[in-house]
Length: 567
Image 1 (cartoon, rainbow, N blue to C red):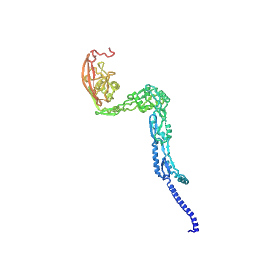
Image 2: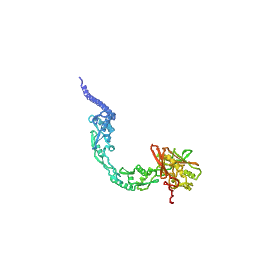
Image 3: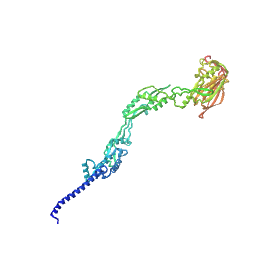
Image 4: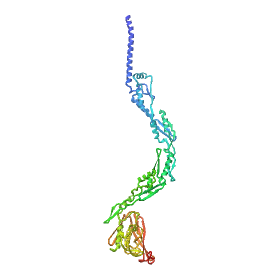
């Protein structure tokens, strides 16, 4: 049996043991709480605090990377939400992120990570202590950029339902510029769309916005366009008087106005001429050379063709820049006349005509003979000197009477000539032999004769029926180059012969088909047929004629010829 002392000691020890066990338990609890708190503090930012939810998903204890992955997935889902715009004429479907919507992923992730970890030590401790009893909800953070939305919507062609038609100026059906009024277009009001978009909840998928229609006005008013038209009518009323080189023309008001162009831009009408069209109009009006064709200087040296000096093609209308300057002058109120610059020919054929490169072949040659040392020989040779080097481009003619003035001052002397059917002396007598020689050279070169006449008395030194004469002021011998190539006339002589040679590019073959001789009264009439076969295969036949008197001084009736003024 325990003694009183023992019992008293036991009573004293019991409370002490209780306190001891209580203190021990409290120490254990303190160590547990301290450890948990230390773990909570150490994991701040690395792990999500307990009882933290993000849009219905419990993220307690999740790593920061896991939390960010979940937020990213939700961001992609929401921003892919289709939004339909009903234009009344169709539907435009765009994703939310294409219409200025965004998602603040970083901010939401930071909010999840710092839930119950932010604030001072006491606040953080209280958040931690209450975490088992009160949850934290982290919401979406959706952004909307109205400027980005506007840029995207204004770039959408589907929101323009009908483009406005600008007013324009036209001369269609009339010579007068008149106004064709503009027409309003129709589009969707982008401002109203942006207001509707700002109120959209992206969680509700498949949403539709009804587009509000608005008028799209032309950039230029009808009144302004009409004012411009009246001003242009005044400026172009005089037409366009043009001088270029040796040519002069005037474009009519209608010709000028049809090359005007008016472009509406930024609320204004830009007026200009279509320079290409106006240039072409002027070249049609001045169709051909506007200056001198500079022919090449040719020489024949030991039978070889030599270009001593190349020529230049004739200039043409018009230099494009000078047309532009004139057009701008008209719009500035100028009235002309407008002096335009010519332009070089861009025709390779004309360039070849000018540089002499097409003179490559001897296409014909004819020689006649005469006695030596007579005055007429001096005239023949002087004629040959003055004709030598004539250069005929296609389509060009040469008149011997206009080319050579047969006067004493020009080196000619008197000798026998036929005048009114009788032989007589006159200055230049004998040059008809040169005429016959060049006539035959031209005949076999395939040239045409714009004007010719045979001798009225036949001389045996000439080809029967195929010869010509000249006298002042008539008859004349006019040769025409109807071939496709330039032609060079060259002459040479000695004491008893005169030769005319023609050079070109061989392009026509000539043969004499035959002759027909008939009587016209007492005169002899000779027809000589010529056949020309051209380079392109065409065959043409023509005829030269000659009429010979029955005798010197007699006409075709056999009567004496009475000179004018002696009858």
